Image (cartoon, rainbow, N blue to C red; front, top):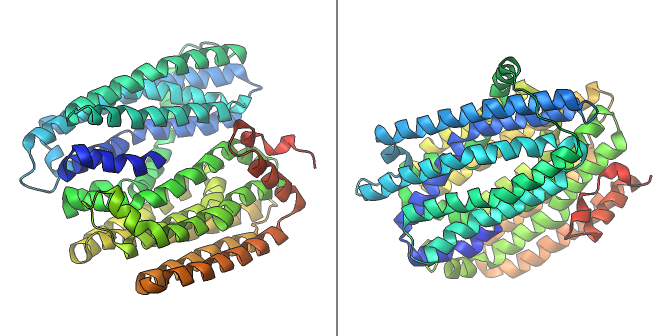
Length: 495
C-alpha cells in the first residue's frame, strides 16, 4: 500500500487519468470476482486452526480436498470473466464515460483474463499458507505475502516506465507474479515435508461440504470488500474514471495506515484465536492492547500530522492533475480509524466463526455504503462517497463490539471497557483536529500542537491502565521493529 504513494505520479506521468482510472477499476473488479476463492480459503484457515497440528491426517484431508475445490472455483471464475467480456458488461462496470476508448475497455477485459489465470497459483499457495499456521509458520507466510505485494507493485510500474500500455502491463504483471511463486512453492514443499503433511486423496464430499459452509464467509468477504475496496467499483459508474482516480488517490494515505495496522493484526490472529479458546484473559488483553496502542500512539497522531502537511505534497505527488479535497481526506482518514478501533471486536467474531454476525453486519455496512453512494454522490460528488464510507464503518464497529462483548461475557471473559474508551477518544481527538484544520487552515499548526498534546495525554492514560503482562508484550514488540522477532507469540514470554 505504501507503494501507491510513490507510484501514482509515475502512472500519471506515462498514462492519462482515464487510462489510470480504467486500471484501478479493473483491479477493483478483480478483487470482487476473486472473493469466492478468498472466502473458501479463509474458512479453511479457521478449520485448520481448529484441527491443530496434533492431527496431521485430518488436516491433510481438509488441505487437499480444499485445493481440489479451489481449482474448480478458479475455473468457474475464468468462465465468468469470459461471459463478462462477451456480453460487453465491462463497459458499465469499468467506466461511466461514453467516449471512453473501446480499445481500453477491450484491453481491460484481457487484463482481467490474464489475472484470472494466476488465481490457481495464488489459491493453492494461500491454502498451504493457512494449513501451516497451526505449526507456527504464520510469520514466514506473511513475509512471503509482503514480498508478493512488492512484486505485484513493481512489475506493472516497471512496465509502464518502459512505455507499456494497459494490455502489456497486465500481461507482464501476471507473468511476474507466476514466476515469483516458484520459490514460494519450493519453500512450501519443504515446510510441508518437515511438518509431515502428506498428500491425501481429495474427497469430493468433504471438499463440497466445506465449500457450502464457506459461502457464509464468502458473503461476509464480499460485503466487507464492498465497504472497503469495492466502493471504487460502484463509484466508477457514478463519478467516472476521473472521479475514481481522485477518490482513490486521496484515500491512499488512510490505506497506508490500514496496511500498517494489518501487519500487526494478521500475525496475531492465530494466537488470539487460541487464547480465546483457552479463556486466557491476560493474553487476550495483551493482543487487544497491541492493536489499540497502534491507534492511540501511532495511527491517529500520524493521520492528523498528515492532514496538516498533505496538500502541497499531494499536488506534487499527482503532478497537479488530481484536485485535493481536505474535508474528504479527513473523512476517509476517520473511517480508517473507526475500522482500526473495531479490529479486536472483529477478531472475536471472525476467530470464533460466528457466521451470522459475519454476514449481517457487513450486509448492513454495505447497504449504507451503496445507498449513500447513490444518494450522496450525485449531489455532493466524491465527498458523498467518503461520508457514506464513514457512516458504514461506524455502524459496523458498533455491531461488532456488541456481538464480541456478548460472546466474551458468555464465555467467562470480559470486554476491556476502559482501554476501548481511550482508543475511541483518539478518534474524537483526530476528528476535532482535522475538522478544525479544514475550517481554519491558517491556524493548522496551532491546532496540530493542541492535538499532539491531547494525543500524548490520551496515550499516558492508556499506558497507565494496561496490565503488566500487556505492557511487557508491547515493549518487546516495539523494541524489535522492524524485524521478524516482532512475530514472537505472546505465550512464549514469561509472566
